[in-house]
Length: 328
Image (cartoon, rainbow, N blue to C red; front, side):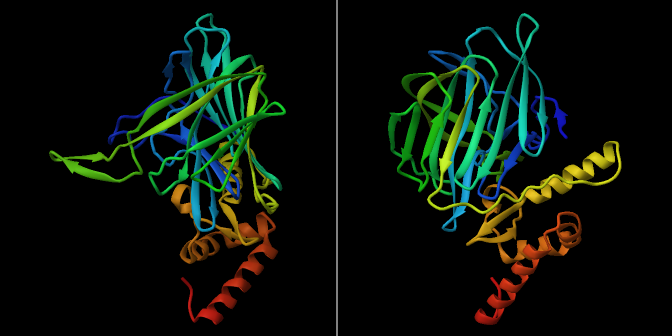
């Protein structure tokens, strides 16, 4: 089940209506805009999705109460050079695919898939033909402007990346060639983190600017995997394939809505909790948990079959209420 959108920006309301995609797991999410923003480098023109907000990219957390950003984006440059024009973007709960048209009329597809296992999180980026990949790093606590130092090593056909600003490391695999370039790119996030101000009688977004780092270019025959290992085994992922009766656009939209609801969940000390959304909202508050249960209780229990999860969560909240004399 997927939905196609046009790969364009929308200048209305200062680009506030720009569309984006978000792939979610209990520990991580990857998001970008549907608009393609080519990256000009001394090594050629790389293609990939724009980031309108500085919160877009690969996020992990909550971990110790914090949200961490690891990647800003992953771009590609086909071995068969030539201009690419964006055609459309297909989005499903587990994958996002950008389709481009070549100058000769052929097509090429860039896909992103985010998956969580008990051993960590995998961001898979596929093109399906030989190309170079540029991994744009911006590793930090997502709510600070700190910059990380990076340690790199290549071992057993993998690039190991250890940033100083996060408790997570990364392992990139699936490539057959490495070129060290150590580029720095200043990226302009024209929508910042969503806050606006009044300038000369016009309401405008407060843009953000960040230096993102491209340490290496990786050549691959098809695609690469960015693996983020975790120090402890992770709980079972919460997403579920929804089986509901009916056919047509409305039925498909309902199934997609319930499947997406199943992904708006995380775990705190092994306890399942519904969360309010993405970016800084990945940290669930008591208000978010209660609102999620209030509006989605029947769906959680009767459609997704999560009655035992809901029961354990309610018992935990009642015990917390008894111990602390209130919820916060």
